[in-house]
Length: 138
Ligand code: HEC
Image (cartoon, rainbow, N blue to C red):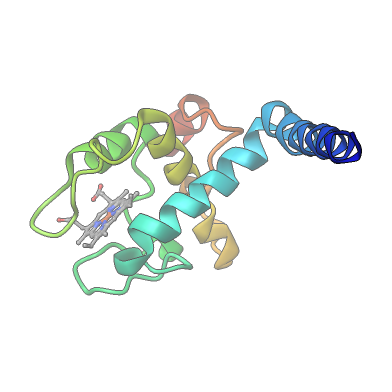
């Protein structure tokens, strides 16, 4: 009996914890999307593009200096999906469309962190690329 009560309490606690940890994830999409984007970036992209967006191989663009980030999200998402040249791999098989958007939104935070203030280097708007993209095109 005692053991059963303990198990029950444990299950209730675990369920409670899950609710606590899951609930904000649903609500505050934007910050969470950036956190997920960071995880993806550090796992798949940082080896070449650098943890802070400073390129690690000469062929890669330097995101911390906003290189290539003047392009709009749609253009960059196609390149992320399909790859480019000999060294930039295609990611469509590894990542979902949403994950690619999240990782791109994270990439767009590098120039500001590095002190760049160019208008074309603005970080992505709250998870949606379209409005910011119009600015960036000009
Ligand atoms: C093996 C090294 C490598 C890895 C890993 C890598 N990249 Fe790249 N990436 C490159 C190189 C090199 C270029 C430049 C390609 C060119 O211009 O020919 C590039 C270019 C880019 C560009 C700019 C495209 C443009 O318009 O020129 C973006 C955006 C990008 N990478 C995103 C990512 C993302 C997101 C990931 C992880 C999911 C990633 N890369 C992983 C090497 C890499």
